[in-house]
Image 1 (cartoon, protein in one colour):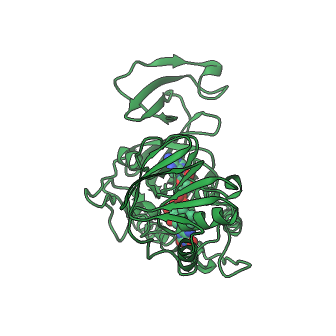
Image 2 (cartoon, rainbow, N blue to C red):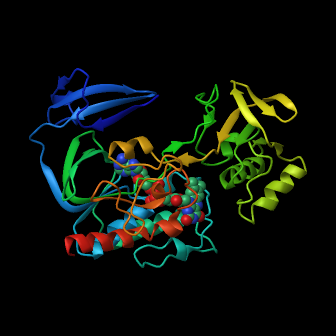
Image 3 (cartoon, rainbow, N blue to C red):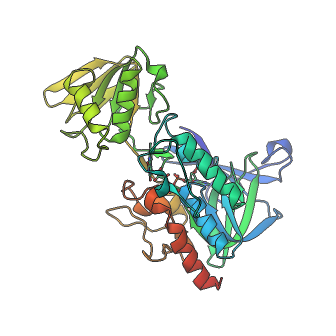
Length: 380
Ligand SMILES: Cc1cc2nc3c(=O)[nH]c(=O)nc-3n(C[C@H](O)[C@H](O)[C@H](O)COP(=O)(O)OP(=O)(O)OC[C@H]3O[C@@H](n4cnc5c(N)ncnc54)[C@H](O)[C@@H]3O)c2cc1C
């Protein structure tokens, strides 16, 4: 259970005043600290001192994923001053993808800002995509604050106040006429909610197969990520068991991957339990409920490729309203403005929990939609 830092007032707990080296940043201003528990999470709230200097821009974009960059470019092209605030590095989610990932998408469908993208082969690699988005950001001279997390957005349309914590832990404050949220979905894994899920041998992110050589590895899931991960680990000398809760692997697995994984299962090279669920994870074993009853298998590592979800709690705290069933945030489909006037949503978060409906290919156009509306309202 990690400690997450947020900036902003949190009622109900006793304030503790800190200053000097103990305050936000070695030479940061004096702040008031409050630690708050909300369910599983612990938050550290830092109340800003009244004299903290503020930076004003026209538009703040939260998140420098492909969509956030596309938004920043389009709004900047429309003549506005834009600042993008990113809690990690530029395209942080893509940076965290498997090291040897090849995109499913051909390069032209990943392009933003009318900058052509090329790749050595038919589909770009992760490395080529990282290079491309770095190039685009520098070409447009985008104003991006990396390693700075947005904690709260207060105020109203035309006068939003954005509070952040920067890379050295110092509190910062910005004012903006409009705010665009493009915070993606890759930070929160969909959990299996079974005993043992928090053991160190269980991973919700997969980087590369080498550490799993000569080990008993269980891959959970039945989509592209699970299939790729199982094949990678099998080819790196792991003994792989694939566990999927449905009777068939997803028909949406890409056409060049599905025959490979299906044949490995058919030939017994990858062991598979379909229509099965993980019940419990122990240090050296995995317990599975299968159609034929309970099974325990030896296990060294679990790679849970069970998907990711947007930070609904964070978005709700900013005043975003969600549809009860789909968990899709309520937005105007033409402008992507949320129910909170002046605050827009962009990229995969527009799809709520249906994260496979919006990806880079289609999310990259959100910037144009939003910039058009902002220009119409602010007279750009
Ligand atoms: C393994 C894998 C392969 C994929 N392959 C493809 C593909 O081939 N083609 C395709 O089109 N799509 C693909 N996708 C999907 C695609 O990567 C996502 O749809 C896309 O990244 C969404 O872009 P985004 O800008 O909306 O969100 P993200 O790329 O997730 O960007 C959101 C950014 O916001 C930042 N952020 C979040 N909260 C805060 C905060 N509070 N303060 C500051 N910053 C914050 C995050 O650090 C992140 O950098 C793939 C996804 C995965 C997992």
